[in-house]
Image (cartoon, rainbow, N blue to C red):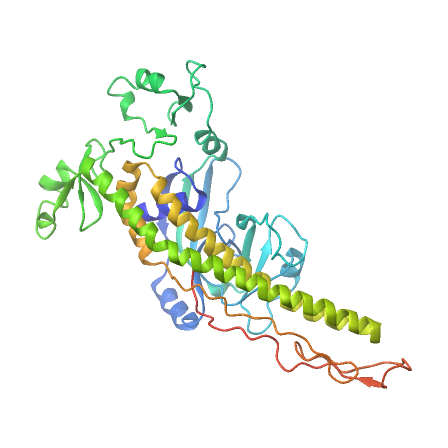
Length: 423
């Protein structure tokens, strides 16, 4: 459950989210069948409400603060970027498994030069339910307004004069340093969770997730979990082999784990830089494609106006591929940036609590960054024929300037490689 809670908080960039319930809805036979059928396709673990729409880098929310979603493994395979209307009325063509849509817009255009892309607006559309493997049904509390408030830099809500330095969810208020100490002065109020702005080094004691009335005093570097004295004396670290594990004091491990994340971030930097470079190269390559399309379109207009329908078709099919690859790369980039920044920004106590999830997430990271799709350039052959994309039915023309029959054909349609790459 802790890993799922961390995943939800990570995806929503949250510190206040509370996990209420997790139900395992997976069926062993279905898992085996799914792995066998889609083992050679690209799969992702994503959240959904309806089993059809899966945000690339978001969690679908309901009205209010209580939300229920399913966590699924999804065989997304190769994707095409399409409009919402297109995704509602048509199925993916052969060799494609899913659509990508912008849930906030139905405009269809090339996205390479859009500097305002919000990856949270984009979702996979899965039309084939067999490509979805439900794993968990999850219920959690998440208040977007309260979350925004907790991250704001505002005046203390108690004294209304000094700048707030912390947020207390229990009191639903921001406090300055003095008011924070005065409000949380007794043993009861000291137990309130508090989140400190711009003070990542501030230590806060946490309670054991197993023995909720006992403070955490140690951290097991082998199991990567916080430990209390009850765990050590008669709990999960009281007998071999766990009792032989070296335990580190809580205050000491706050600094140790922070340094671990810093070093891990240093290792992420080359991956991040390579992905940025790869995306830029992809954009440059596709910009050449755009220039090529413009030139060819002008030539076609000069020769034969009616052929514009075919070139538009080619352009759109390439846009579908380019946008799909670009959006998935941006999603991977944002995921890497979030991975780099989120854990290091956590309050040490939260890092202690979730360090195993941090390590597991980074261990499972696929550092493959290549974008293995290059749109093919179009060439004119003969008086009027395209040298690439989709094989089109020969069409006839009555224009005296042209042959009686003009054939548009394609030799290839822009190869797509490596269907199993993950991010």
